[in-house]
Length: 154
Image (cartoon, rainbow, N blue to C red; front, top):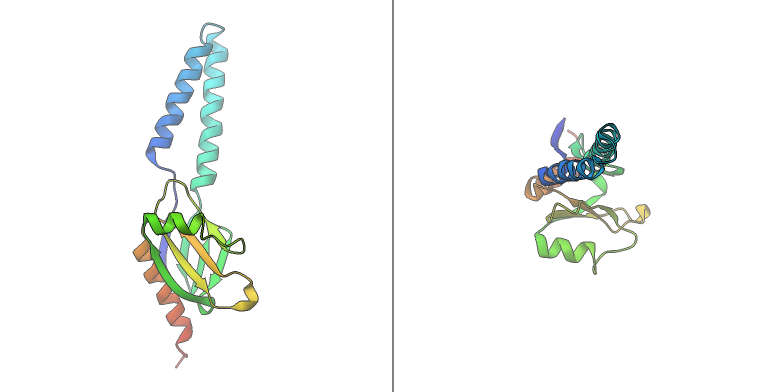
């Protein structure tokens, strides 16, 4: 059962900037050849669309007691304390407070985040840092998955 699902798509302003860049490049090359200018502008837009799709196509899901965020997988029983980070705290945790052993899913266009402590020492990871648009909802979902796994089955 999925209790949280978010796709970290890039913001609209990035797409607008890509369109402006494609149009500017096409206009700059237009005196050389209209065909070449249109082809180069189209290729630029296709490359940027592919890059934006990969970078923004990462999903964060909490389902069946497991947190899956891109390449990061954390089972509910291994999750510890969950902390919602505002912009200042998120900046601190991805810069000066960051651990080299932590698993980070950072998206530069998302200023808020969630930090989940890893309670399993054998995983050799102190915490998981996840950029998100909805930190309170993600934190609640991770806490629910953790608590669900901690509750013995009846």
